[in-house]
Amino acid sequence: MEEKYKEEFQNLNNYAEELKATNYESTVIVKSDSNAVFDRMYICFGALKRGFLEGCRPIIGLDVCFLKGLVKGQLLVVVGRDGNNQMFPIAWAVVHNENTETWPWFTNQLCDDLEIGDGLGWAVISDMQKMGKKNSGKELQYQFWVTARSPNEPEMRKQLDAMAELENGLAAKEDLLEHWPVQGWCQAFFSDVVKCDVIDNNMCETFNGVILEARCKPIISMLEEIRIYVMKRLVLKREYMKKWKTNYAPRILERLEKSRKLAMATIMYEGADPLSYLSEYFCKEMYKKAYMHMLNPVKGQMFWPKSNDGPLLPPLVKRMPGRPAKKRKREPLEGKNRNKLSRVGRRMTCGFCHKEGHNKSGCPTRQQFPGRPGQTILGRDVMRPASSISTSQLLAQKDSYIQRRKEQAFSEDIIPISTQESCAQPPNKGKQKVGC
Image (cartoon, rainbow, N blue to C red; front, side, top):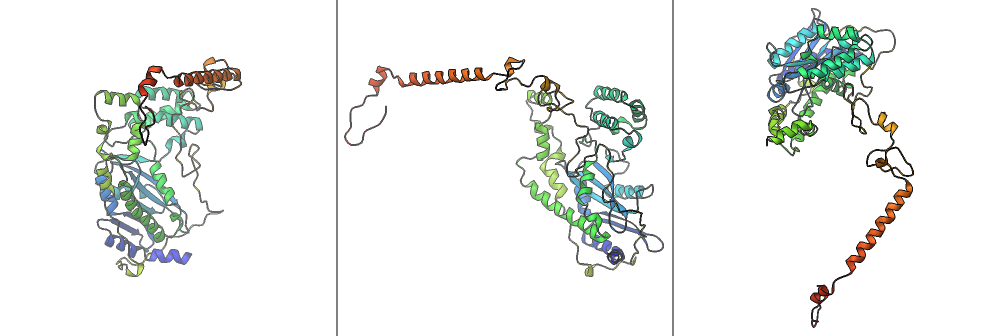
């Protein structure tokens, strides 16, 4: 296994030259120290770069995940969102660790590729988790997510007051308002330029989960598995678009159906089409632009061009005491299932009393009154007559219903004499007509 790692580092510069030769406008950078020891590598394919700029919103998410193979390191990733609100991988880099040197280097390369410039009109999401590290406590962190999802300023102030009443909540509230502008974490103050209201970085987490097995492999094998996954994804999304029944993305239409009834009623009152209020980022044409570019395959290793930089040496392996960890340490409010998004911060609505703050199983109204308006409970009398019925009452209703049906059937069998005479017909020879 160690020989495999060494061999792939020796061919890493040749692999970089092959990527640039087969994929037009791709940015592939490999850096090493003075002793030809690998330091870092950055990859941004031209197909992903053009697809994101032409068909996606100007919002990106930055994240980092650990490499789990023999040679440790970290993978910096940047992921966007397509017109169907799904992840769109853009670029990634392999570094020793994230620090004040590797992150600026990575973001500078990214700004050049995406032509971000001074950042005006762009939104960047990062998973720094400062709130959870400075202010521990499950209730406090949960209240922060509820505050961040506030749709307007009065609701935000109400939730901030609720945060201040918790243990250490007042200090957390003051720190939040003093060091973190509300325009960067509360939905009520988000700009509508980027057409996105997400407050989490789940798209990057999803991408990191997809490449989990690849992160256990040697460097070229890992990078190839990521490239093949992205190449197949571009094709699958193009085929998926052909199945759309409308001109807008299915996930966006689903969200439109769940939107607030007041807003929909206002639009319908004006005689307008709700679809006309959707941004062009969500239409089929923009989605097609995002996935229209091809990611070309790579030839076999024997056909790779020889790099003038020569072979590289793998970085030194530092073996830590104890068994190597395979899973990262999760935050208290993170979901345990990586294939299912966390429900933290979502407003829970009861299906029984339709009030917020609890679900049906813990509804105090349901516990007080077992029945529900219009619901039938056999053999039991409860406080609300409209919501229950005893067994004797139910049997009486059944007998009454049967009697009414019998009377109705009897009345339908009696036909007036005038009607019978009008229906009479003289007999015909041969075939006879049946009925009136």
